Length: 212
Image (cartoon, rainbow, N blue to C red; front, side, top):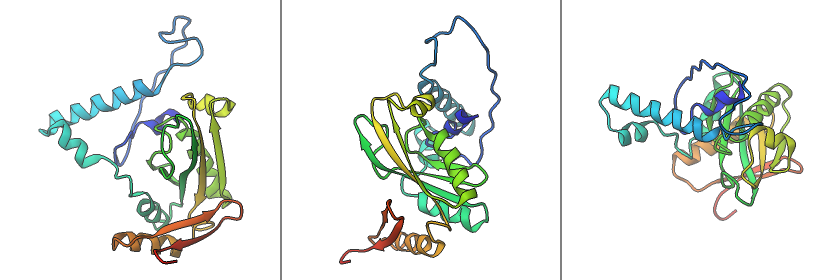
């Protein structure tokens, strides 16, 4: 089930349907414990996007241009889901080391209905982050998750790139006030420079503008 969180890839697909068949075999094509996983998923996604382009009469470049998730749409999406009554969580990469799959500042937003947008690891640990986010919606508590190549949980969900990442998981409402997130979104819409500063030790937060 956690693998289905990969299927949106980098696209703003409104929904994803998957029919998966699992087969036990002693002649696996990659290795005895686990396969690479992500390359195969990406291949499948991109071939489906190419098929859609042909059926819609669009070029491969054009269909991707129309459907890529913009890297800076995460706060807006989280606010929309929260105001729709679904609940939402913003997960942010706050620290990296080594060959981490995504840079600091990368974000994934999750709704209480399991919808996701964005990425914190290109599919490596999204399943674990989504599970933590759904728990955060229920508990109202924020957390910082750590993943590394030597971490049993991280390896189990696929972070085997040799890097380390830390991800802050913050529910909107209990931790990120709706009014503050709304102010951030409004400032971004007006193209004003603004940042949301968070102290992960105390979870105190404030908006910062030039000159503050």
